[in-house]
Length: 263
Image (cartoon, rainbow, N blue to C red):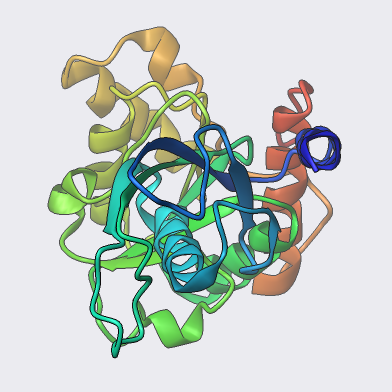
């Protein structure tokens, strides 16, 4: 069983796929699990391995699925000293299980859930990005419109970094409805460690915006690193085609290739 589990771990790592690793770290008294037992929980809810079976294993699986949204880790404690006439385990002991998110899939943050943002978010999820969509408008930031995405955040942009975490595996795409909102988001995300920040903008408008960003304390190098006009030039005019241009550039960057828009 251990060999099969480690072979599965190898396959998952080779696919750059996120998963939650669940490990029995402590048992007290009689318990169906043993210290060191492991179970992998995948994003679709399927599992490999075991942490002892039974109803508590299902509870571990459900808790693990929540980590795909929070991205954190947690220790679960189960008391197995339960009444005989109940549905809970009656082994008489206690078990503690550590669950941790193992994520190699990069994160894409799409600021703006309009025509381009909506299409891009769906496509990026298919391209193995963990996608979060952020928009101030409740009618646009509706989780029902983005079933493929990891999360949808509806709040003022100035409050968004309190709700999402940006790190050196984050790809930020800014497609808000207006120039001032674009500037607001850029002022928030440029100081972060996000390696890719892209903006739908004309080259002329971006010259003025970069000067404003530098005046706000951002380095010239950081301001110049913004990918704008965003995407690669395929002559696109529709939101769907523009989303293809953007995603192509982001995927190239993820794969170590820097391709900027060329007319």
